[in-house]
Length: 502
Image 1 (cartoon, rainbow, N blue to C red):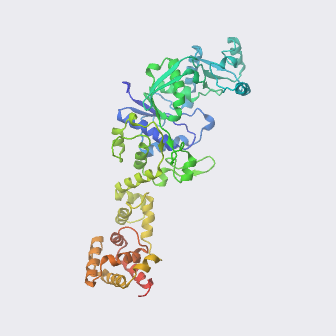
Image 2 (cartoon, one colour):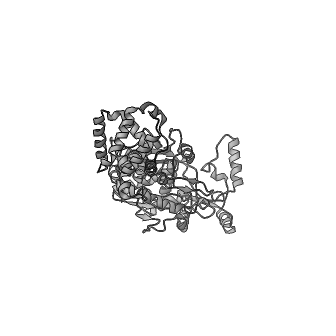
C-alpha cells in the first residue's frame, strides 16, 4: 500500500438497475476505505447519453444506502471535487484531450464509418484483423496523414471527428495488480482508442483517468472485464505525466453462473428464479425484476454473501457483521478465479441472520396486524423454520386458520383407540389448565396420559393432526399457547367429530 491517503470510488453508469456484481464492487471499495481510514466516493459515469435511463441514478443511491454502504463524497453528498456526474464535467475532459493533442500524444481522426469498413475489408482479405494502431493510422483519414492546414480546415468546416490516443508503437507496459500481481503487455497489442467522441463527450478511457487523477483516487477496484483496458489506462497516465500518482489497480474476479460456466447474467437469474438486482427494478419495456430486498433477503445476509464471492478470510468463520468485514478484509485475499453465484448459500445466510434477528423487530415489521405479544410468539415460533421473513406471516396465518382436512395417511396409520382416548381426555382437562402456556400445557397432558396408561409418543402425532391438520409443523405446545384455550378446544371438538369412528 502506498502512503497517499486512501480514496476509492464506485463509478457506475446510470443505464438501468444496478447488477449485484456492482454491489460487490462497491462493497469491496467500501471495506478497504473504512479499514484504512479512507474516503468512499460515488461518481456517476453518464457520458454515454444514448444509454442513460431515467431513475437509474436514484436507484443506485438507494441500493447503496439499503445495504449499508455510506458515501463520504460524491453524488448526493457533494465534496471538494464537484461536480461528480461526468456529463457535467465535459469541458474538463476536452481541456485534457487538447493537452494530449498539443503534446503529440493524441490526434484528430475524421474517418467515416465507410472508410473504416473499407480498411477492415482490405485487411481481412489479406488475412489480418483490423486495428486502428501504429500500423494502420498512417493510411487513414486523420491529422497524422493530413497537413496542419487541412486538419484546421476540416475542423472549421464542422467535419465530424473523434480524438484518438496515439499509442506508442514499441513500448512495454508493466503494472502491478494487487490481485493478479504483475501484468506485462506490449503496446503493439493496444489500439488507438477514441478519447473524445464526435458528440463532444469523452469515452470511459479518458474520463475515468482524468477524474481519478483530479479526485486523488488511490485505488481503482473494478471488475475483471476492465483488465484488458488497464494497459491503455497506464499509457494515458504516462502521457499526462501522472505515472507517479497513478492509483493501484485491483481487478475483481467475475461472478459466474451457478454451475460455473460463464459470466452471470440476468437471463441466468430469470431461469434460476433468483434476483440479480439489490432492489426491484422495472425496465423501460415495463418488465419488473424483483430485487433481493423485496424477495426477503436481509441486508446483513446479502452483504455477508457478497463478501465471500471472491474473498476469503482464510479462517473457518463464515458469519461477519459489516464491522467484522471491515477488520478482516484484504484485497490480497481476493481470488483470481471467478466465483460461482450459489443462491442456496445466499438463502443459508438469510436463514442464519433471521435466527439472530430480534423477535420484537421482526414482529413489528412483518406481523403489524397482530397484538404485539402474540406477534412476538409467532415470530419466535417460525423464524428458525423459514428462509425469508415474510414467510413468518404466511406461516402464522396458516397456523391460526382452523384445518378443514386431516392428513389421510397419518390418520390411517395412527388413529386408534389410545389416540382417541388421549385426545378426549386432553379436551376434558383443558378448562383446568389455568396458566395456558406451553410448559403448563405439556405437563397437564403428560400427567393425564400417565393416569390413563397412554404413552405420549403413541398419540402426539394424532394430537398434532387434530390441532393442525398435518403431521409436521412448529412446536405443538407453543402453537397451542398462541392459539389460546378456546381455539384449541374448538379444534379438538371438530377433529373428534370428523375423524373416523372407532
